[in-house]
Image 1 (tube, one colour):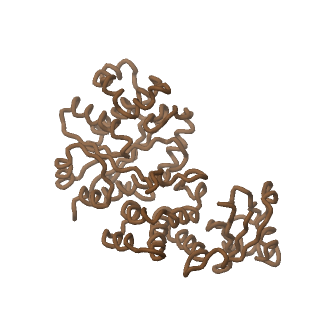
Image 2: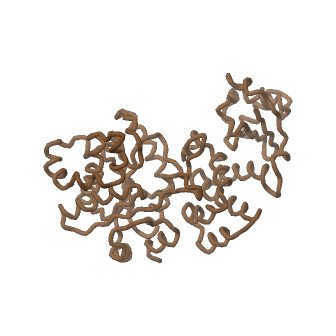
Image 3: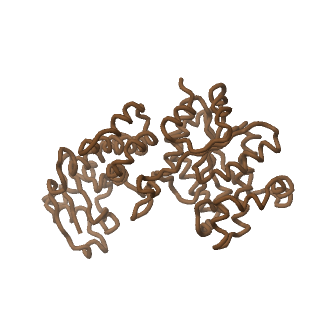
Length: 407
């Protein structure tokens, strides 16, 4: 098996690493426990997090042991990295709930069976720390002068930086020390915006334990246009299908910039690199086939084959074989009609998809109706403005009947 460092490098993940050669050698000769921290600031992971999950999957497949660290403690402060303002302060109950949702999502991708991976929560050791003891043991090793040269703090000095946030780096560094002592963790991974935080922990462990540990960052998931991937005008692309439907995720990936196709295939799928390069080299209308592969592969991994097949089928009604939206029957309706919502059965009858409510009720109960690729699971489902994406929804009846409603 190839060294996972080479795999990550070839696929374009790696941004910076401490002592690359020694790290590559370590990953070659032993099973390494490594960690990535996830602050529980929302009740779902995002498409941006999926890049980090892909790294964990590559590492685990190569025999290394992931520690998906839930940031129940660090989220109480919030990481100032990349933020122009202080994060919203969440309650302990909200953070615990968010962490439990993360746990569910991670379990779909990482094998947490005996000794293969771990999912601790840093609230377990950070929440009961004694402040004076912590400052005597940990704070003494951090230079304020040096910390102020890091971008995560320097960029905030004009707007104001609280001591509350200034302590974040010490807490994250202490996480690395705790995980080293508890799990023999020798490597911290994170996005490139985490480099200064990772260096803090890397240096702390080396000072206090006199052992060699490592840090590595991977590139943030950005588009050719320079924006963060997974952020749209309408908001974040979530991994929870209740927040972002599989159809929406599929369509988002199906519509990426031509210049990003090869890069995203390398980072977000397990397709062999020869195939990634072949798909990425397609030109003109052919590149749409590569985008479809990207959208299908990612949707399949995140939501499963059934949802990916449904999203692909819905998309094909609009795009496949040169078809465009004009090939799908559509009805224009006034947006005011949807302010208070219209029952799905009434809407389907109005646009001519069903002849009676009893026919519609039977279809819904049999799982034969979807809105934007998402199964309608209740006969009293209301269709509201929130269901419309770019002023449209796509209703599917059975396997082949589509109707688009536009406002």
